[in-house]
Length: 387
Image (tube, rainbow, N blue to C red; front, side, top):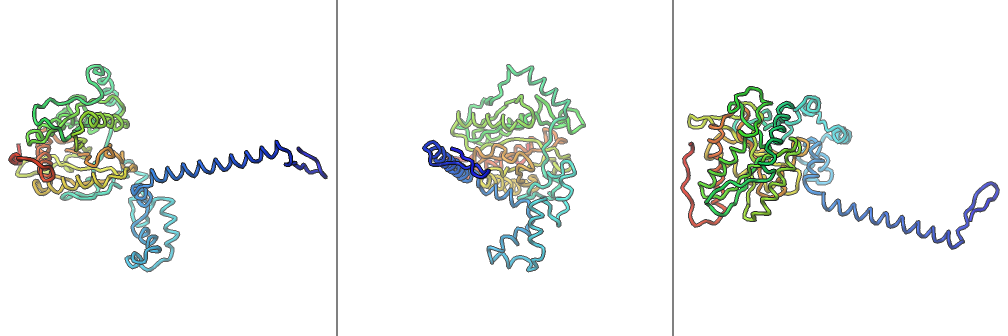
């Protein structure tokens, strides 16, 4: 009940309705804080992974990060320069701008289109590989993208958007699932074209590479299931589509243990070709996404394959590359399995002869690793190094 006293309004809280309203207000406020705190704790528990910390600290230079950690860990303080003048202001500057004053790439990388791709981390570098050799992901030209969309409409009733199994009588147990997220990626010499933005085709593409890899693995005694799915979605949404393909495969066949996504690099021939025993090979790259908590397990498999290829075919592998959300898709469906990898085989200027030669080499390296870890009664003889 309100009263006026000397120009001021007073509220009488002695009435039962006023007291009830006041209690409800307090309880409501308390419930809001309780639910907000509970939600924050659940969200923190769900998403506070090492990859999140990595994305935060990725904007700091090594020197600044070492200085900041050294203030809490005395041992780290002995590993840096003792000069601390301006370190605090530099820490705030790097956090606010993501610019490292000692790294020119951080100044111009946000101004030049595509330059940020070279922020990709090279975990293991192949022979002669530097930042300009990092695998590049591109999209078809707008005109070609429309043409591919028209082709998808023509065959949408005959080609499903999920996987199509490759018939193979043996081996009966399938351990490897091969698919192609960017299924239309192709090779200019096979299409009779010159423009790198036109290295895409509905029929003649990396699906043929995936099929060949499956055949080679089958021949070596490792059951492989190959997707020939053609997706109708736009290029940026293709990982969402291929994720459904992988999940369907995992649901239908619980024997699957390895998941390989085949791609084609957009780099030119001088960066995607090598010569081994007098024969040209399309170079291969392994890309691992870090935008999930188990990426280190996928990295382990990629390292093993790179090292095995390096011992069998020196110079064939360009190396292992890490990409986060800022430099690529960041996840690449690799959160679905600790044995998932993305493989770039060749570039826009390679041909199928060179690519298939590399595919056979990859199958051999994979088989060597597989039979080292899997119990088998008998192992097939090793194939020759070239077709």
